[in-house]
Image 1 (cartoon, rainbow, N blue to C red):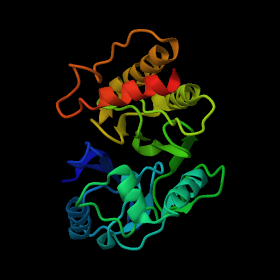
Image 2 (cartoon, rainbow, N blue to C red; image 1 turned 30 degrees about the vertical axis):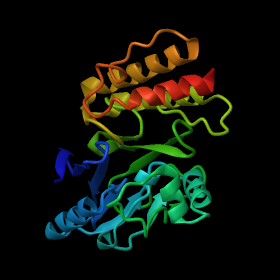
Image 3 (tube, helix red, strand yellow; image 1 turned 90 degrees about the vertical axis):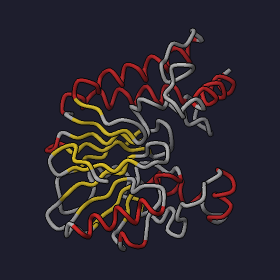
Image 4 (tube, rainbow, N blue to C red; image 1 turned 45 degrees about the vertical axis):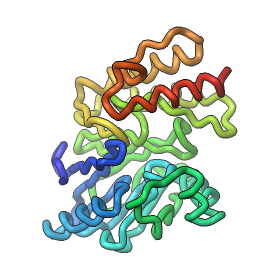
Length: 263
């Protein structure tokens, strides 16, 4: 079910890892950001939009992880965008075929894969999504995944954070070939901090939507985690260990793997 979080901005939360799809209403249709994961939910979202007389005129993937690259035929054939680096990474990872990706990462049943990763890379240095709706600023950085982008819908006061600023996930570093993944992530947090004053609502890729009073706290929490990881200090983070939300205990395993890779 779609839930309005700001004027003209709605969110659908999936049963899969509290994944958030974001709908932004424009003059001639809607922009759909990180469309969703499970097939029945994607079809339901398409029906809800159709029943309300809204057509998807553009899509955007915040980064090249499979759960942010999905689509459903009933959403239509609108252009789907990502940053140039995001699209190039998606093409490279899918070069061996969708089935190989599904097997490698363990994509669960019920996920439609026919349209996985069919996104167009926007020209390098593009700063806004090309569509007939409110200006959506692209804040590209290298935290979490190549070509990761947060999106600022300035006139609506909404920040779509991609896989950052989550209350259930720790910062998950891109450890594949990056020189300094922790500094990459810290640099991205500085970019988000730079627009925090313009944010009334922020939507993480996974987890709870937050308000203006929470955005800096989430930034500080992610920064604190990274400093502990970098400096080898004891970790105190409610997203890891016994205080983790039910169903998210596996995040502790991610933390341990990041510790080992950075050792």
